Image (cartoon, rainbow over all chains, first blue to last red; front, top):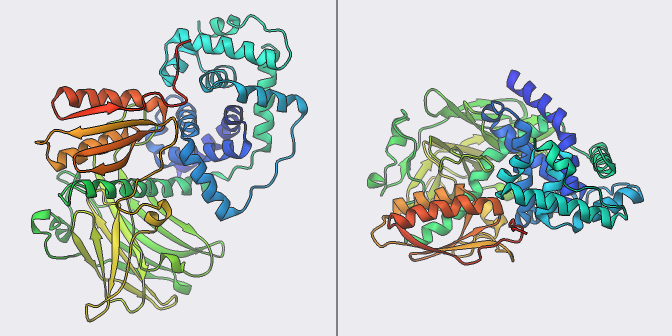
Length: 171
Length: 343
């Protein structure tokens, strides 16, 4: 069916990007896989409507981020999955460098981490992040600035001009 | 792109490379399951609501509008629902090795189906509403799961969707489908709905698995039904609640879901003259905006908000209702842990 084919192409094209972004948000690859699958399943359930959106991937990302907030349900689902499937296979360790970055991201307050992931990984403009997170544009810029400074410090780097990239990409 | 951007991009690439994600067809199947199961969970919320409404006709009201429906189903109005309502028989198609499908009409020429079939060597159970394709089910093993025996699976599709940026308060048509399998001694299955209506459905024998299948469609969002299995003499031989109730640990008087530190909480009290139907509609609208009904005691309702981004939409709606004199409310824990703050 054409709609199924279209969904399949969309899924195959976007799933990797979204897993990457959700991994940066949650710091856990299995959680990221779970959240992305769940968000895509919801997209599949409503594909006739979502396919008409200008950027369906943004809808899936938004749902996945919302689900990531919903920790209570996530834990319940995780517990149910463990019962059903047994423990997930261990993922080979990443390089020390990347582990350090993941830990630094996890140390950021949630709003800062969300803003950093959305802006620097998903390329979402600041005004759209503000709309998604329900915060003023200035607040989002502040989160991004503080987030970058905090990451740089934790990674032992010299902070760059934190707002440089933000201002440029926000037009 | 600076060094941080490069490292973030590397993280994303490494995670994507290592991710173990299912194929697209599996995700589509899960999407169909989700459409029904989502409503099943909401049905458990409705259970608590009904307790609070002291048996008033509130949940499972017909929201389908004037769509043509089978005659027997039209008789479901509460005024004539004191006696059990016999549902129309399903069409039956039988296949090899116990495969079997029940089908029936829905609205506007649509169909519902409930089938057992084999897929990649496993027995699958699927419910589906068409057009639209919403459905639920799953595969596993070589025979029906005993834990599911004598239990109805109720679910519905239609209305709104979590994550939708423009919720419409659940307006629109709903289809409800109740399916399951029962003991071979069953002559009739009685489905007890939350509002007191009782549906009678004649199950169909599947000799291969020694069970009987049943299915019933309703032009409304009925997502919870207790199953009472009757033999030919009318004697009860089994009576079970939906499995979802046990999985959620939700007895009628228990909270729907445990609250977590940091969750937003809304304590709500309706004005005395607000009828139960309107209370239900309003609470469903609030749930569709992201709140979850936690408990209901008399006129007092407690709702939990777990997702920060839902708070404003919910409080906007509550403020409107308060201005209209429908209710009073208090956001007793207004700042969930992940709430944005102004530096």
